[in-house]
Amino acid sequence: MKKKFSLVGFSGTFGPLHIGHKQLFRKAFEVSEKVMVGITDDSMTIKKECAELIAPYSERKAAIINFLKEEGYSENVIFIKLTDNYGPAIEDKGLEALILSKETAYMGDKINEIRKERNLKPLDYVTVDLILAKDGKRISSTRIRKKEIDPDGNVLE
Image (cartoon, rainbow, N blue to C red):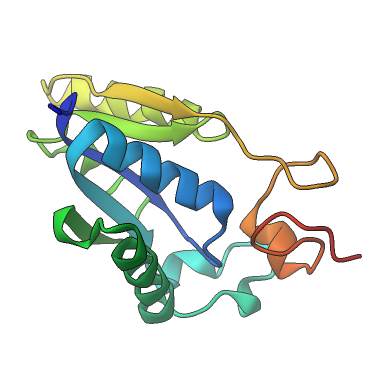
């Protein structure tokens, strides 16, 4: 089946990788031939809540690689080490769309503003619904680091 896009992208810290992230990966590979994944560099994680509990870049990338191998997606992925909020999304001419959660949709608008200033074609958005934990609140890596929930959304406290 022909995919809608040739290249889509999305990014995150992925610390730790959870079912919400996995949903983003599945959607990305559902709609695109190739996926560009931006993973925040260790220098960007120090500002996050519970930053001391975020694994180093190499471990977070390895977890993603393992997941993609399990899913059969490991051949069509490009990894980017992000050192800023936008990465190649503001300059890559081959990128066609962003995979965004409802929580990160505002970033698509900001990226497209910058692309417009640079005379680049705006990116399409593919928005994925947030997955809720068993307590009805959103799943997030911060909640996992705080030991409120596990990576599958089960409540721990």
